[in-house]
Amino acid sequence: MSNEFVRTNRNVEKPRKSQWTVSAKKCLQEDEENRLMKNLKEAAKSNKRRDVYRQIIFHLVLRSGLRCSEVKDLNWEDCALGNGQSSIEVVRGKGGKRAVVLIGPKLKANLRAFLRWRKTYENTEDIWGPVLLSTHKKRYTRYGIYELVKKVYADYGLPQRYHVHSLRHSFVSDLYRTTKDLRLCQIQARHSSSSVTEQYAHLNSIEIKNAMALLD
Image (cartoon, rainbow, N blue to C red; front, side, top):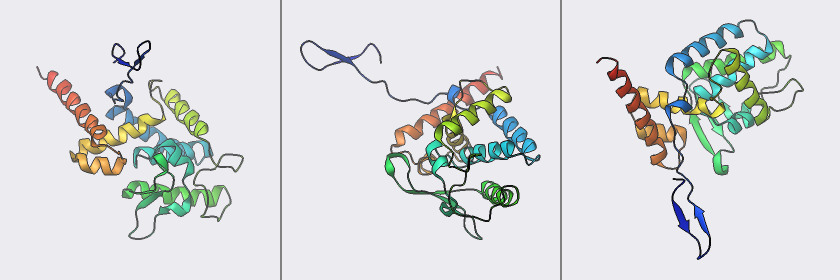
């Protein structure tokens, strides 16, 4: 809290850092998310580079919970998309940790479709190296992904308080809403502490309370 202090010596007092929290304002609402993904899917049918890249970037975060830096660093050789395989290996995750992230059939299908699109429209047979390439044939930067996501929010009328990490928040919230399994959510989100994951349970309890209030 800002009004709490830790005495470091006789003359200097230093404010304590407030604990990180997640709130409903940091997550896309369910109707916003559904509408956004539907619009991105429709736009991608044009096969225009901008629209195809927009769709795959949003799918990657909303359907796997990858962090922005992990999306940027993702290589095709990190993606297990063959028969009986459905995972992404995070080579340099938070704190430099390696991890394997399981993915669902929809994201797997979208990644395979994106690879086919790149072979057809970007004239490449290369299935190695960066999944996401800029128009200059270089790896996307974190800033480039950040700007792309913010532009999508603006184009589709979503609140500008949302940012790239809002997609990860939404993923964890959606996963908990579906499974009600905190341990599963902690593993998939790769939270180092269960106390972080528990905040998403609290978030969903607030949504339930608000929904019930509408019945009164």
